[in-house]
Image 1 (cartoon, one colour):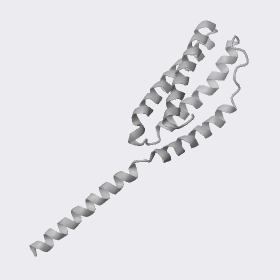
Image 2 (cartoon, one colour; image 1 turned 60 degrees about the horizontal axis):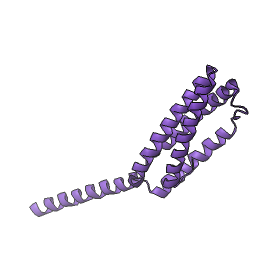
Image 3 (tube, helix red, strand yellow; image 1 turned 90 degrees about the vertical axis):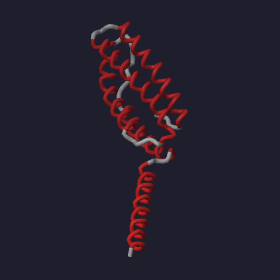
Image 4 (tube, helix red, strand yellow; image 1 turned 180 degrees about the vertical axis):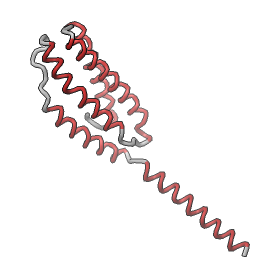
Length: 149
């Protein structure tokens, strides 16, 4: 009887370990699946951004402000949608760098939008250049990871 009870305990413990290991595996997304989901998000938000008119003249602060005011919320949503996809452990460090650069670029873009709203052309342009530099750095990291967003 003791052996039967011990055997049952061993079976239960083995089942528990298998469930934990299997659930851990299913919770970890493969890099390929992660990149496929990121691609879906980037495609969706890219299409939304394509509908926003870019400013035709950077000296027209009102036009710059209107364009940035329309684009900034979409860019923030896109970053949050990508951030919400559970990354595989192998990409976490590169993604942390990507999101740091992306967040900093969005802060610069917001500063440019605020300056445009105040008709302050030099601060607007300076913040816009900072945004473009940070955005380009983020794109390099994204390329290294394997996505274009």
